[in-house]
Image (tube, rainbow, N blue to C red; front, side, top):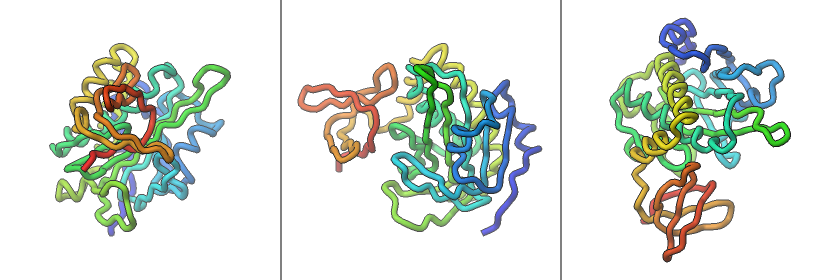
Length: 259
């Protein structure tokens, strides 16, 4: 499998943002891009982006391992210092929207979104998001959005809850990592502004891409399994589960369609 170094100049030419990605850090190896931006005293600037070719402790939600072949994909994190705590979950949904739109814009591949943060092509997972935060007192100090996009990897050994795929597998040609990253960041900045000014629009755009709303679903959170209809999202982006005329808000969990 051929590896290719990330071309920072090519990425920079396509980047059209005010803040997001203007401080850009590229490393070959790190334990976790999220951990580095959450805990580093060196990186404090809002919009800092850290891209790593390899993560030795990359992880997804619930501490699951995220394995990515070096030089093939995009594993990066965005540091935000200015987030309204009530809108954190909408920022999370907006991040997946940016990734989905970028893939469609560049490769005309039809994407769909799975609550809370998976991006799918033909029902297979092409990207995932892990949002983590730290607080000082009652205020959010740092919000870090970790994004993993399968770009040119074609072989995914191991067992997965959701079958993985990549842009290369679906597009039948290599993806351009520099263009994808710049497009994601350009769109993310636009969407982040919308989260601040018009969060309802972000939620509506997200719902338009989710095929599960209105369907019978199973929700597993910790060791509890619940069944019902994925009725809607609330104003904060949490899942509204309807079962036996009872309405319940789900803040986190793995959602799948009931067979």
